[in-house]
Image 1 (cartoon, rainbow, N blue to C red):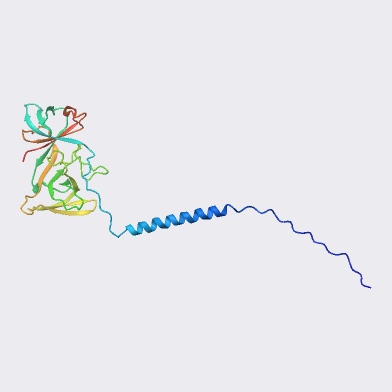
Image 2 (tube, rainbow, N blue to C red):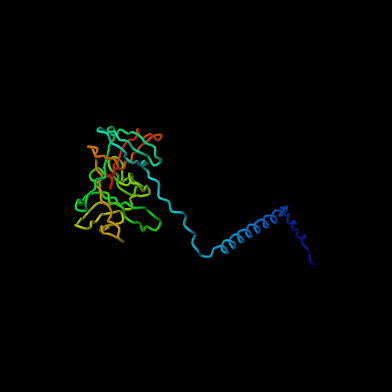
Length: 247
């Protein structure tokens, strides 16, 4: 006689409550919309990009970090008083006895010697095909400040400040390592550069100056004057002066 044991029983599995996934639909739609916008922007950018590089902006001569004001010297008295005129025609009397005065002394290439600092002055431009207008030689006390393109004298001048062309700047600076009758070599931040002073296209060679102190105040009517450190447009407040003799 067959005996049958008790029937096995299994507990029915308990299902966890399902979370609502209704938020997935808006999220998916939002992601798709963002992807479409990105694709549109990329396509538009590629359509407008014809491979032509952007046109460079207008080239501007950098503003000097050591502001100066140029004047014409109209008259010089026996003392250190001079009468100067500004670009707008206004005239002023300035006493130079109380400020350091430096002068651009005309020299020749034979006066250039190793160890001197040299500023090459020209009008900067975007393609760097400038014409050199002058060579300025500085002796002891010249410094090259961070961000400066040229050496400065003890009074802070580079040699272009008194000229009529106020867009001139040092385009090259270095220490003389060799000099001969018609050329000299300077050591610059980019290596050694040889400068040969010759006539180009009928133009005279660049003028050569030594920027030095001028305790004797060798100033005459017709010379140019640059004043540094002027406050409120008053030349009497100048802290230093540079004289450029008339050519």
